[in-house]
Length: 163
Image (cartoon, rainbow, N blue to C red):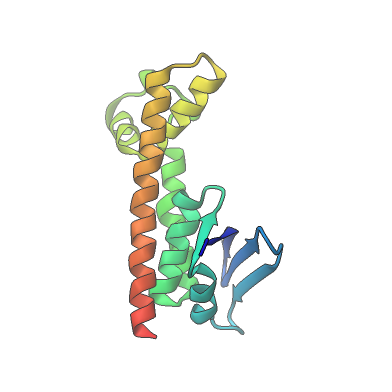
């Protein structure tokens, strides 16, 4: 039995959560919404995650953690809190200023951020390919993806046990 491939995305706004799933074979779209007048349907979310290969843009950095929080809490407001965690990670990268020009605590924080290595790998493709920089970028992305996937899988398992 082959797993179905599903492209997914999540959106979180004030008092609103949306998870969209597109089955690549049937082209069927499923959207799971939650807002003050409609509770998050955790069972529908679980059903769409079960038995498929998920594909998403920026999914390891944002969508999977948001889904993990949604599964763990069933709360729209809790999913919005993930933004507070991941948004600073985007600013703590060398996207606007190369690391060589940074100093102090900011340079240290940027060095610890896995997204730094992804940004530097992308820059290497644009401004002179450096294999070691690209390798570090892929490694950082893979490790961060593995971490967020593991957290999502644990939240999914916990939610399935809770019923």
